[in-house]
Length: 314
Image 1 (cartoon, one colour):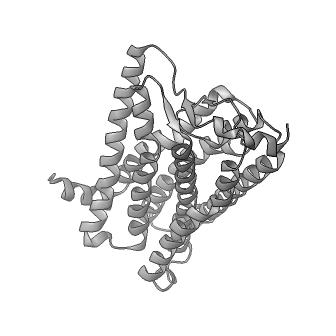
Image 2 (cartoon, rainbow, N blue to C red; image 1 turned 180 degrees about the vertical axis):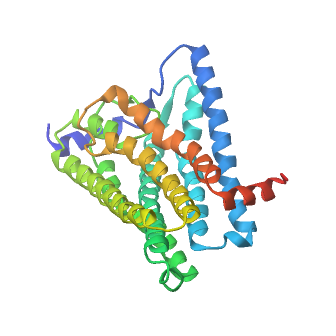
Image 3 (tube, helix red, strand yellow; image 1 turned 90 degrees about the vertical axis):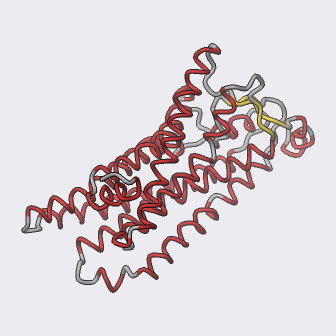
């Protein structure tokens, strides 16, 4: 079947079925309860960080401005997939329309791209602050910091625009069951390839995913390698401890996020470890945003003090 012939019947697929986590109704309701609580705590934790940075003048510095924007990004990120996942737990049909599916795909990937960029910019900020402390105030100004934030948001929503458009043009000629809890790239490519070979689209999506992931990951690792080398040379024990505390928080988030992302998107549509894909996706899209507020607040005295002020805790 040619692509043109397949496209002529692609309109038969007007919706997709998201299998999610198929199990008995009692287990479905238990999972709904667990993820609902996790979702609410994720929103509250990240909103607390945003409010703390907004209301505490001591935190109006580039590092905390980036952190507040990162927490706001996490709020948007979980809202791109978790509400639909929660609704599917209680749904009998578990369907999502064609348009909603690709809209979710676009926002999910755009926000994920923005997260990669934010983690890179946060690594750059720590590199400047620790390796070049004398130049830091003149380089990382509030204006420059805001420019970096705007760059992350704009570029994040542009990077995967063409791949998503290409995927929407693929023929979906019959199979419409997605063994996942969201409209992810790999399962959609697998459905389309069941109708007609799509090596070009798979190559483009895989290349852009791999380029983004590895470029930002190795930049972050390179930055923190230089940072940790500089931290070891700090003469003050207290200074080393404070610098290492900040860096270890960032690195913990990086490894949590990138570890699961690499397992999923370095080769989308390859069909490898299909049974595990939904669990790796669940980890970085639901659990990592849940852990981030705890990682950043528990290892940072200034943030803990600001959160206590916001929450009215003495």
